[in-house]
Length: 113
Image (cartoon, rainbow, N blue to C red; front, side, top):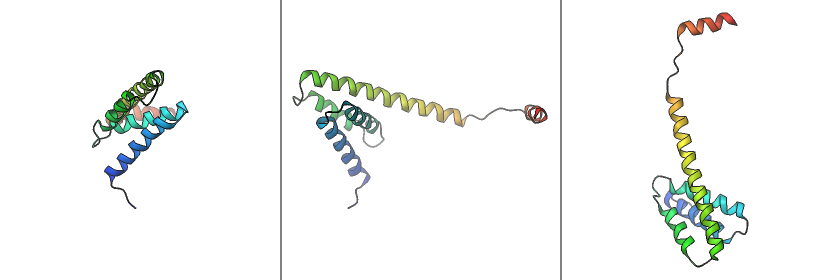
């Protein structure tokens, strides 16, 4: 059975939401939230993962305390995904900049060796 890219993305989002909902381990919930945050920034998916998380957090499936904790986790992982994306763009831009090293600098370094 092969999955189209869209079906694969939907499956990943559904499984991550399942981990958020069913895991008693906060580490696993954080990782699932992180995956959902990254998926929500993925081209083609739009805000679907974010909307699903928001709907889930608004549901009555958890106690108010658990919902608040999960909301904080979701916000932290969303911010982390955004910061990482900005970091990647900054690094990519730095790598694209030409390095300016004059011929004289190269000659001086070669003579020092």
